[in-house]
Amino acid sequence: MKKIIKTANAPEAIGPYSQAVVAGDFVFTAGQIAISPETNKLINGNVAEQTKQVLDNLEAVIKASGTKLSSVVKTTVYLIKPEDFAPMNEVYATYFSNEPPARVTVFVSSLPKGALVEIDATAKL
Image 1 (cartoon, rainbow, N blue to C red):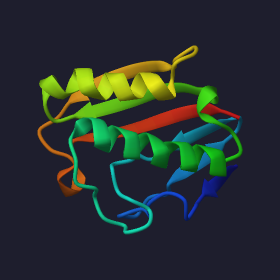
Image 2: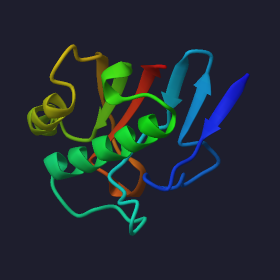
Image 3: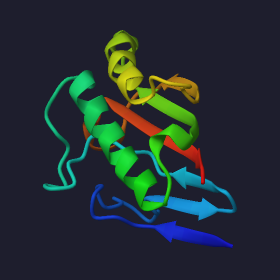
Image 4: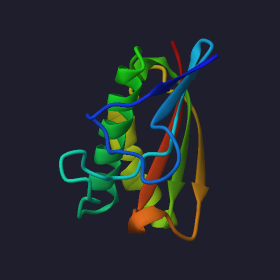
């Protein structure tokens, strides 16, 4: 059995998918980009600013599912440019400073709405 997670504290899905799904003892989030939940538009900014918005969005979805960022066991980070890795990583480290989750970072040719970074997560309830 699965439970669909939806919160106004994160951007609405921009397609036919859920912000997150709880299945068993795990939460699986959709990829988050730097869309402001207030304006529903991509924020202007560099990769560090966008990473902060992405992680704020991810945190809101994870909290709505009944857990917290410290329960995240794995993330996948999608970046457009290899030179954005270090600034993304600096911001990422402030959200996952203690016992960080496993992570994969993938470089892609483009992301939705022209975003510079996208992150999804799996968390334990």
